Length: 467
Image (cartoon, rainbow, N blue to C red; front, side):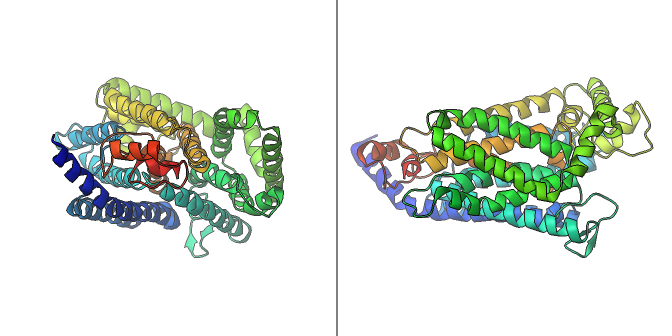
């Protein structure tokens, strides 16, 4: 490649920078808006709701691909897309070659997977820009407070109606969700981000730190109180797991700062004290049933055993994605008088429906998410960006843990929100090729970091993370 060709390529990259930022902003609002819209639309539980949201995501992805390519912006590729694409290809093969026990159900599941894939790619494109990541934190902070306030108001006014008009007396509604554990799963994803935004350090603020934290901590406190009134044992256990993961990830940051560590402990105690207003009695009573051979917990273990029986009969590619409701009755080992449409254990159901091939894809996705989500950005990276990325990983870890006891990914809204956060967490950790200067910056962006000042540097890719 001659020097003239390199100069032309550099000029094109510089011209593509404004367009790339515009399309990243478009991807951010499209992905975030659709994920939150799914939550508001009663968790996108109805066919009309999830189809509408998925169509919006497919349209946004098509506009991004066509528009960005037309303006010379290279579309990035991320390694985390490989296991996601492999899993989708497996499900497509199950439907196309009739490996599935119910091809129609597998096709429906494939359409929902396509929506999750669309939001994942939009997130990977959008959150190459640190400004969008900070905007995501602010938006989720506000949304956590609004969702928690709505759930508390509904709980104390009309427990069986969603938004005051949708009768859900047949289930256990909390907030906009028909199922209380799905609401808790949504909060498992939102609360870590909201907590970081509420308590992250601010420079040059005339307001006392404790006063600022008290004011900003009201929103996550509302969300935490809503989890308590939801009486979701899995949600509480997931929050405890998130607290342990957070302690492990943030310990080094606070180990040398005794004052900050003490302030965080006081703020956490204040949050827990605030939730006392919502009443812990019903939740504590439900937790007490666990040591008395709780029927709900025992039934879930037996259903998981049935999933293992399905897997033994279909070890490699499973019985077919989304076929659990029609396949499980043949392998049911007990009769509780209820019909199980889901296994209440995402991993057991995934193994039954997609076999070893699907398990490998899921494990690879989780490993890559952890690797790229925790990959260091560099010594000059913004502390807010670092804290937000850790919060995203914590949220995903808690949600994955909660999926051991509930069918969280079968809530369309929660699935979309998870892949939004997963894309945001992994976007910054990949230094591959794509865009004007790579997914996280190419050679020109890295050169700007080395020659430019530590703060105030702006670039197409990796140098933006140091701004």
